[in-house]
Image 1: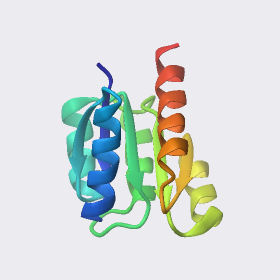
Image 2: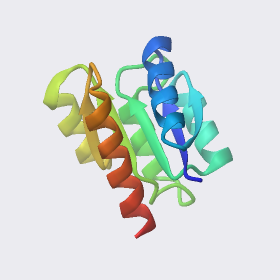
Image 3: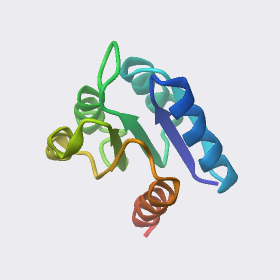
Length: 123
């Protein structure tokens, strides 16, 4: 079973993603900000990290950089979620994220992107 770490400060969005992913058979762990998310990533070594960009404590771009700079996590696919348009998503991609999805999340597109990133990781 693939494991996914979802890092999102908005409880409703976090739970929506968690439930959608669990229904598809993924093991999901959640975190509320980039600092907590980074610690969880180190602990669990997920198959995929899904992170919001705008969060308190440490934002998603900071998280992407830390993950890419950590040997044990550097190859982990990262999907960023943003409600701030393609500018912030493009910046996150330049920092090492693998893909992005806009907010509000379209569940079908979100799940298709998750599957693509995990399949790429396994292949």
